[in-house]
Length: 182
Image: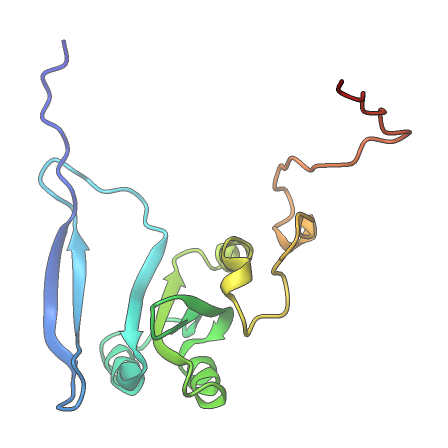
């Protein structure tokens, strides 16, 4: 019988209070870190930094904070623009702040929140972006590439070389005739 203690979850630690706190906004934005819990050495992380469903009003403050505290951080990331109900409306990959600001300017009434994910290993950014776009397909009113609104599968070449895959194909030849039920 194994009597080892279960590993504890990561512990959320707030590093800076109020990265964003505007009088007219019901939201504040904080910066923090997840530390491994006792007995949990942690595992390799997928993301360096992320922010989920932050208000667009905080975009410049988040940009300034990251520029000051993490100047070497890559700014090319996966990002999501959300509507007022928190539904994803656009998913993309590129410069966090300029791309999101452009989407907000183009769709200022529809978009209210943004999310971003700085991927630790850059070579996986395109694959993660593709996965998100395909999963959210019908919700993405402002995306036109990579999403699929039908049963057709996406292009397997959107993933990295060396990836093993399963792919659906139609059977060749005549389709079997259906029997009539009496």
